[in-house]
Image 1 (cartoon, rainbow, N blue to C red):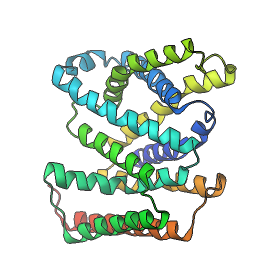
Image 2 (image 1 turned 90 degrees about the horizontal axis):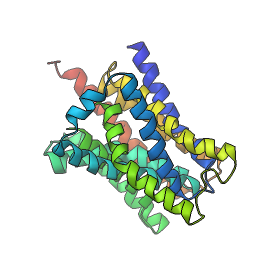
Image 3 (image 1 turned 180 degrees about the vertical axis):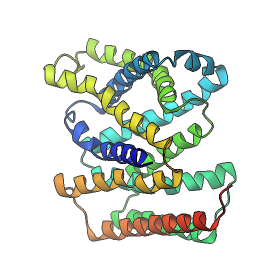
Image 4 (image 1 turned 60 degrees about the horizontal axis):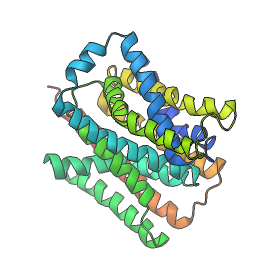
Length: 291
């Protein structure tokens, strides 16, 4: 179990430091960066699947119904990646952190609305407190935190679709990026033909960074998948806040993004909601006999 905890900490820490990497590519259009992330991730994942002998199970699972599910998941994760990379390079790292702070609560709402799951009173209180925080940010900033909401909604949708997915994390992402690979490659070739392409035109370091988007994406995913097999989901849920906490600290202290008193109040409501939700969930699991 200790090894699983270290895998989870490693995965969420790498996720948290993603802004450092994408900032290196900030002068490249976000859609090009996402296209490279898709393409090189697909290549890395397919190489891993072939090397580990998982090709036959991937091919067997890639039936029409599964492909439709993974196509929808691919759309959700591509929107998430595009919004995230654009936001990081536009100077909204703090708001991306908010998105991943509220994502677990959005996932709970999806479970209630779409899957018909029920919530206890304290869970409803946590959801209401988070909703008030978002509402307060909307009023104080005179605009909804749309980046945070888009990230939370897209990743929440992705998680909802993956809930019934037949493949493991690596094979699933390989299929998703495989579905997106041809459109991504077509777009990159079009941009290169139009003399807007950055690949191989801005020096070897930048080209290597674009290729590196593949392993940068897959390494934390592999750590995440390994952790999921070794430690309880409840512990994974607690550790996941490492990611947005690091992003928040990077945004405020490294990139010097503004963080006003009104933002603090809105964030504090979300943090309080997460504390209530996590403590209540832990207490409920302690009281409920294991099946």
